[in-house]
Amino acid sequence: MDKPYALVLAVLAALCIGCASKPLRLPTDFDAGQLVLVPTATEPELVLDGPESKASGGVRGAVRGGKTGLGVGALLCAAAGPFAGACIASLLPISGAIGAGTGAAVGTVLAETSDEVIAKRDLLQTRMAAAGMPVAVVRHMGRAARTSWGVELPVVADADGAAAVKAGWVLSIHVIELATQGYGSAKPYALELSVVMELVDAPQTRAPIQRPYQVQSPSQRTTEQWAMDGGAPVQAAIDEILGLLASKILQDLR
Image 1 (cartoon, rainbow, N blue to C red):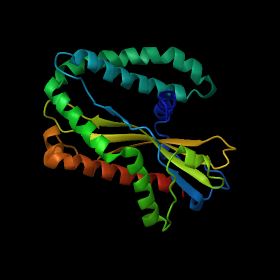
Image 2 (cartoon, rainbow, N blue to C red):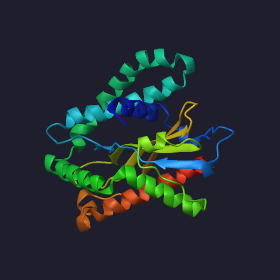
Image 3 (cartoon, helix red, strand yellow):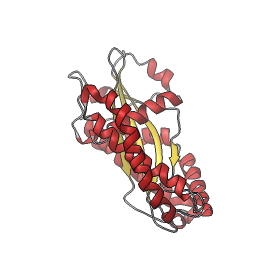
Image 4 (cartoon, helix red, strand yellow):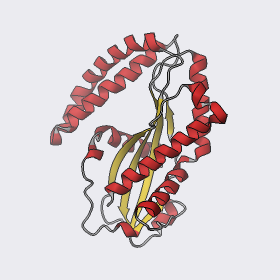
């Protein structure tokens, strides 16, 4: 998945917060028993919540707050229906500026030290790479299908293999980012995974069906606690998140 496509999927996720609570509208001829899984080629981005350091806390806080404001603006615009484009052009700069002002004030107070941020980043990047997220999510989908549906879903190696599928439905999970939720010096935080599910009929005669998902780890830990036993708690949390994600997606596809 190239960067422009990743950006499109990220925007889709931002505009569609809350969509996962609505029933997924599947074609009348959809057959879950004809699903084929395909791993994507792109690793997720790592996004650290909160300011980067005490020296730059105001700047990073402004970015974080701005994102919050933009998210609210996007939701308001999404409700505008056919006028959403004009709404986004006019409203988002205002909502982003409001969020940025609030974020700057909070960010300066709650910023972590540079060493804390580096330790967190290095730990999570290492464990995320070791997890092999694109393949791991497919593995968890297959495991959940065996447990919940009692079926073995076939897996093709890559996009070329998916293109060779002539019948059925191709299911891809685009892993967008792994983010921390919560910040502050020596404060616990959770991990949150954002993905976009994409369902395509094998002949590719119809537009893809897409839905964003966000799943957060039930547990929160400090970086020191996440790093125990060589980062084993991070791997356990990723596995737990992927298991919850797979269950949610399969529920939507039934």
